[in-house]
Image (cartoon, rainbow over all chains, first blue to last red; front, side):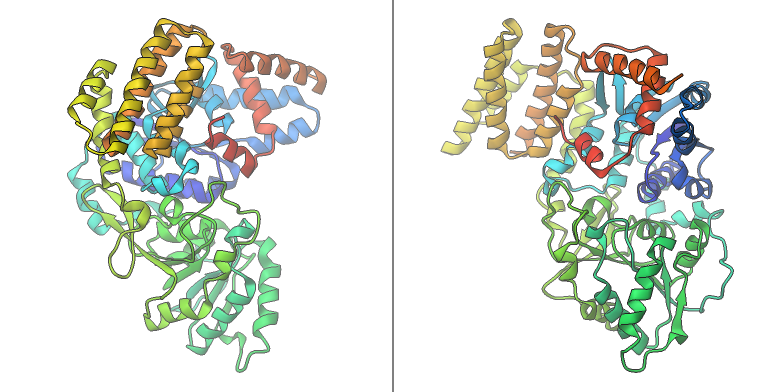
Length: 511
Length: 52
């Protein structure tokens, strides 16, 4: 089975894409190609589970355009697309969320396509799972899955793959490290036998722990005779200099146990350092995903991003978080007060004295061996609140989607179910009355697609969405509507009715 | 091709896109090229993840 993964994005996202590629290798006879951007090329080429790496030549296209050579820019784009068009895939999974991924997907030949795609004059999100991925920002607390798991579930559903025994066994001794054999490369400087990696930078201010906190943590670790290796990019060299200025005046400080690897390593050399570390301390960064790929324990500081969605993938990683309610727009552009609220002493005590943090959220990642998804647990073995409320949601997505793809829904069938449900309370009755009014309005809209009829339909949909409080389901429905071609109004309304009934059914089962 | 001609072709494609009309393979390649030249931003990603 030949699969194409499209994710020409930043290294962190690409590393999550590679985790999906690794999971897919537990299904028989799978061959995977990967479309990547230049910035993440080295990572994908070092992953032995990829058959062919297609590198999107964006820099070359930009260079030609900057020199006003637009013919060349178009020719380079065309050459890249034509090479791809010569391939034939069983599945093309576009895991990328920007428009150009959707246009690129439209030019690829595959039996099945999932993710964003330009088709019939609209950008459509193929696959209900991928619709869910796009809908998450509307209410992050209603998503219980890690992004890698959503990708995996979407692909599995598209190809109708069944869980294999080998996958079940594999999760007991999950070793993604086996697929990264070509990646690590020893750097040209000495490393101690045992060491902790401190990755003090991050691409966004909202993901950076304050430098004064890093300085205090450095001091606490040095006092405990720990060896430290500092990693980061050349642009982050100044952060290290500032940190040294803060730590140097502290009593008994010496450089003896410090290795400054910042600005000195390629991705391959960073991989070597991370693979051989005792542990890695980092914010929500690409280095976190790379360390997780090597199963090195990560201690992660999360501020304005959500570890349920994009935490370190795999078992045995630890996350500290001051606040689990993440704003929908992920305000990474400004420093996060919640990150600053995580104390260096608490982190040092956790690692060096195994003292469980109090008054702060603390999560450990573990596999759910029944569903093959990643979950976060606190010190009392309680699951992350986003992953508790609707285990039923998981079942609905997994079971219901299969049912939906095989059986056709009808408004009559749904109306019967509503009657059988026998609402008990006043609020239940009002929800059910609203649901029945909606079903009637849908029938009216199909028969008479007049603007005032459609406006009333939309009004009722909004009321029902508010009443059921299933925002992700309704956002996914609206995303699906955005991708529906409107050339033929009757066809559009029929498609809308089908998709509405699906959303309605999902929300009803959770209600 | 001059920058003016490139933008002229692109404007015609965008007009079709906004009108939800199908566009040819050649037009999609030019559109892809233009999108690759745009600056990729966090804002753009957020726009994409939220329905209009």
